[in-house]
Image 1 (cartoon, rainbow, N blue to C red):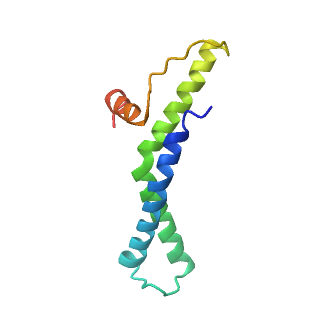
Image 2: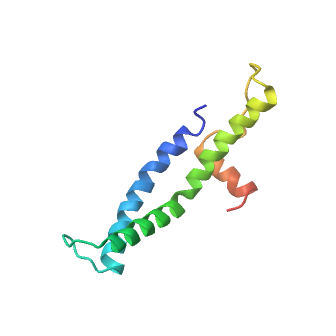
Length: 107
């Protein structure tokens, strides 16, 4: 049930940090809005959409790992139909999952 919890928690911090950084970068560099200036709704939309897009692209591997953990656990439950058997997981941790996905699924 909680197999994807750690990748989710580990992914939130860099996603949020990158989103703030990209937002400020787009705001200052591309739109040339200085600190303290009021932005228009369109400028705010551009900053938010760009920041969300770039930060999600950067943290997508952690999201893939989270989904793999969750699907693997679900597939195991379906195979064993709720029987209490010793569970052997192919993915043992975030680093192992990343390496396994890079080797078998590509990057």
